[in-house]
Each structure stands twice: as structure tokens, then as C-alpha cells.
Image 1 (cartoon, rainbow, N blue to C red):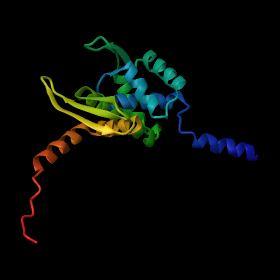
Image 2: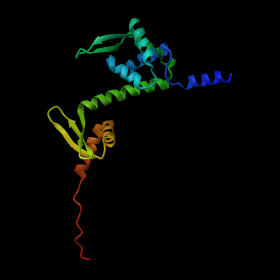
Image 3: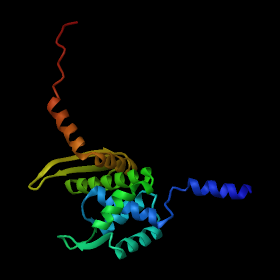
Length: 197
């Protein structure tokens, strides 16, 4: 009896979704909320990185959604395969969303928003780790179509700290850029003390 209770508790503690119907609802809900075509690889990365979706269940769900025309596969302008939500999938997302726990819905949508924000930042920002002496330069370049808006090097004593700096900048590149500009514009010369003592 005790082993059975432990097994039930372990299953309840497992955050991975283990049934395809719930995952079907979640994936339709995600495509509905982000309201844009999503490349096949992107949807996979978003779903798996949350830790709530198992690879095998994901594949079964995608197969079901395609076969039953809740989603479809189309090529985008760049020729990449993208998932598009169909009217049946939209109805599934809207009408059945409460059958998938809100915590899972929120986690999946938040992961997608972060994923696409990070992809956008990576296009506008280049970070390189350059070995120098006993440390590293973290070179941060904020890019525009015609030129670099900013090219900045920061020193870090090792690669771990260099990557930490890079990751922190990637969390909010526009905020980082704004703070650097604000600091530069508000910087003033230190007043000299000319009093005789």
C-alpha cells in the first residue's frame, strides 16, 4: 500500500504532460495566443524547453493535429516549414482551453514570448567572447541596418563571468543600450576642490 502511495505522489509531482489530448489543446492554444506562423523547429524548441512536454508525446500530438486538420504545414517567405492554426484548431484552443491547466498554458505562452524576443534580440545584437591574456573581452555590438549603434568591450576574468555578462545583456538589450546612453549623457566632470586648507 505504501509503495502505491509513493508511486501516486511521484506521478503527481511529475510536471511533464503525459497525455496527448491535453497536449493537443496546449499546442493549439499556443498557436492561437501567439497568432503567427511558427517554424517547425521553433515550436519544438519552445515546447520542449518548458520541461512540461515530452518529445514522444509532442510528436504524437503534432501527428494528430496535422492528421485531423487542427493545424497545417505551410512554407513561409523564406521557404521554412511553419505550423499554422486552422479553424478547427482555433475552436479547440478557445473552447477546450480549460481542460489544460492554466499553469501549463501560461508557462508555454511565456516560453514562446521569451523565445521570439530572444531571437529578435540576437538579430539586433552580437555578443562575442574574445580571449585576452588571462581573461576575456565581452564584445557587445548593437546593430542597425546601416551601422553599429554601439560597439563596447567589457573585460571579464574568465569565460564563465564573460558569458554571465553576455546573458544579462541578452535579457534586455534595448534596456542595456538605453542605460549606457543615459549614463553617457548624464556623466559630468567631477568638481575640483580649490579651497585652501
